[in-house]
Image (cartoon, rainbow, N blue to C red; front, side):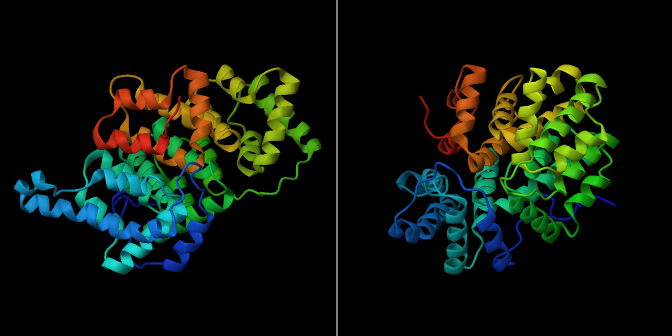
Length: 371
């Protein structure tokens, strides 16, 4: 099966105003909520669409009459950041619907047409329905891998984040959005991706097709048995790609996995993530460790993704944008704490040092202040 590269695979494509409204409303109700958004007053919430309209309309005037920019015309990027950057997923959904109803155009389309560069990418991703965002990020990762006939760790991370970092219902919503947008299933495209080797393909397909129980019930007996199975594969046989490892990681509830991983550490004196890194350096092992983190401690994964994007020659804006936008939905406070503990610096200082302009300002709004 061909990946849907030619079918709306661009992150900047829109599904149009008023399409699948009922479905989108259900998806938005399932979405994770940013833990640091400002709760606007009813008057503020009602004023958001008008404020956004004023902010983006000015750009069109500025393009026609550049001389008017000195007189106060032009896009008010700070207003866009202030309004959209401080709203939860549910609030942003209300803003999108109200804007479309009032002005008969898609807010996302207008943002795409008026903004540019990394700032546009970040703003559009944040303003997007979380399930649509996940679907587009997954499709873009698979398309990039197919084009290069090799999948980078960063594009594999995108699939793992979509599959593991949020609640089970969110992944279901992503799969529905993916089929609606691209005309086939996420599982089909992952399975057909020519860049994936057998073991990594099996892991990623198993993760994106999973549906985990959300109940908090834990079977300690199962935790003990499966901790032993994981240790056998990872520590003794040094085969983290074994079928039992993939089965456990891709099917068990997050509560059950936490219990299993606790038992593993108690019995072997090291965390399963440490042993995965210690006993294998393959790409599969790196992605498996990211899955373990996203399932049980997503702040560890997102802290590492942000740090990776900043280190080295040049900033990886694609990874940085995705990690901060997605991380802000999952829980930025925990990510900041993990980042500071592991890397002895702050997300804020690293973002300030490696980005600029309104792109920097928007990322800092999502990160929020830290000491």
